[in-house]
Image 1 (cartoon, one colour):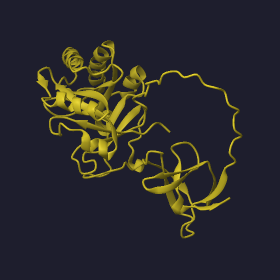
Image 2 (image 1 turned 90 degrees about the horizontal axis):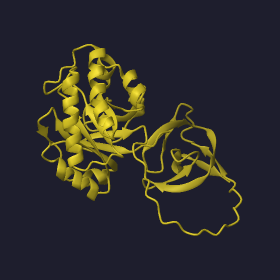
Image 3 (image 1 turned 120 degrees about the vertical axis):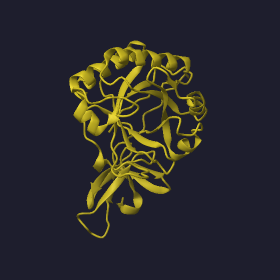
Image 4 (image 1 turned 90 degrees about the vertical axis):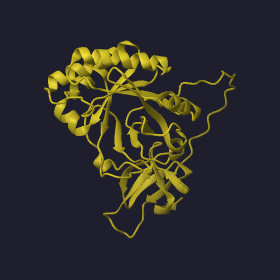
Length: 296
């Protein structure tokens, strides 16, 4: 499984403080910087400072108004890049293009024309040294953009909005995931934890924790013998063969489901979300102990 990180995207409508989002579990923030060729988000600078103060990773986005015009797309991209440089957005991060209906952005031209303009915008940002991505709704991406051309050129770079229901959603239900090729982030709600902020989850590792500690001289030690795992029946609930239990990752994010009355090896134990959990696979596969009958 790809790394799962919670991400919020903020504009002038959100707070200048990222503290509440950090406390809710977000590790990354995408700040709106610009729109068209004349609008700056007046809160962007303060939102960026708060992102850094809360030790969260920063990306930025631009709201498009160029429709299918290549010349306007290039002009808007240059405007966006200039602002990103002025606000010291790291080139290790992403500049996202928000291409959707609104504020005069026309999406009614052909897929080919729309895609050419989108790629022209992304190319300017990419040539400036940034990683790039494209945001829109699942329906608009499917119906109005040749996303395979975008993905072919820039890899897994789509940021897709698709909600299971309107209103507050705290954790994504992957039964409603908008299956598409090239999805890097899924925006699953516009009201995460009741904070009136978009909630997103990554399907691709967007950031790399590259900080290295000073090198230390290491004295080689004999390798310990691998610990023999114990065995657990996972899970045993109401003897219902149709019941399934949802796994967590080591950070407490919910993952896939497993069937009842199946046997697994337990590799580690850890408290996650206040629950004792057993590791039955990789770091994305922890099952709450309350659903298990452990035998040595």
